[in-house]
Image (cartoon, rainbow, N blue to C red):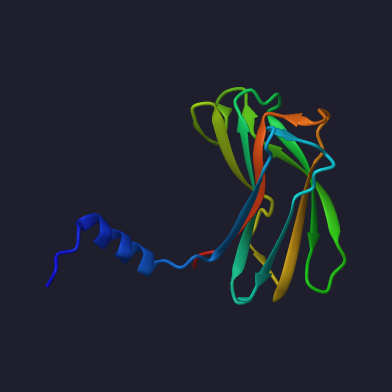
Length: 154
């Protein structure tokens, strides 16, 4: 029997035990600027209606970002429903701790839930559209933005 290197064995065991019960997609802003006219759209399918889901916004920015929050218009198109838009204020920093996300060098990542409680989703395709709604146009020092949808583990 051949010997399998330890790191390869660990990687095989971990990958076989976990399933990816999540959708995550991010859009990169090449000039580190997010114009209000740039409205990234994310479409994914829900098959499992027996569990609840958490929905989060992913936001990555540089340390030079000018604000401690992010105002977003989030448009949601659920299967069989009309599109709904809500204005959401996402807190990115406070005066005591500074940036609330995780950081490395001068880049900070935030994963902020837009649903307080887990939600049940219908079977079918969902579309989320993000539009920055800040007073700076274009919004400077923004690297990317996206959506994450994950099953709530029992």
